[in-house]
Length: 259
Image (tube, rainbow, N blue to C red):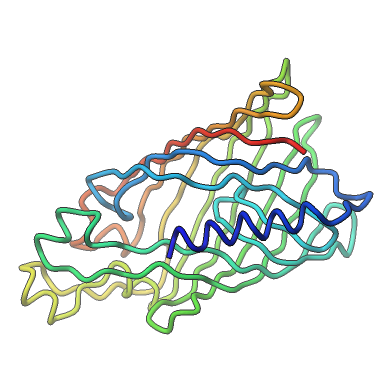
């Protein structure tokens, strides 16, 4: 599923790139690939490495990007300067039992990857000379076994000098009861076979995250990019018997072509 979605994202972005840019498409277009280390699942005590796409493509009302914490694409409009409102389709990660010895040894079922559909409001401004982006985003999983989530994310640029750019970001994500129980819950039947206690988390905060992302202009066309992020599970998510670590790190590095 992940490979299919990533391939479709790259193909879709290539189609967008072929479209003429509008005068107000101020953000530079990026398309590339990276390698990152992530936890096997949220709360895992083991890590996995994987390739991931690097995208930032805006063509009129259409967009595809990975710069706001999700692989997402959709359409949006700007009712006033700096404000964008739109809808998006996004890739949602799962909890693959085969990627975690802890889950596999206890027979915990896989939570499949999938897609979500949702809406967002984004505001771009400046604090002095520093660019500031505030994003509110709603995501509803299309799989009936998963639920809905909402994000509030703020990104503040703090470096743009000698080819280097960098920004700090923070995010709060909350989830409804179905999403929390689908990912962090332990049903009585699974508890009986796994030895873990049954657990039914309620709706509420899922995680807080913070980190930095940046890049270095290698040449006129190529950009080296990187990011480092810490996720901290909170609320009922952090209390799940599936959680081995409440804090997880995500580190990535990649290269992108700047069109």
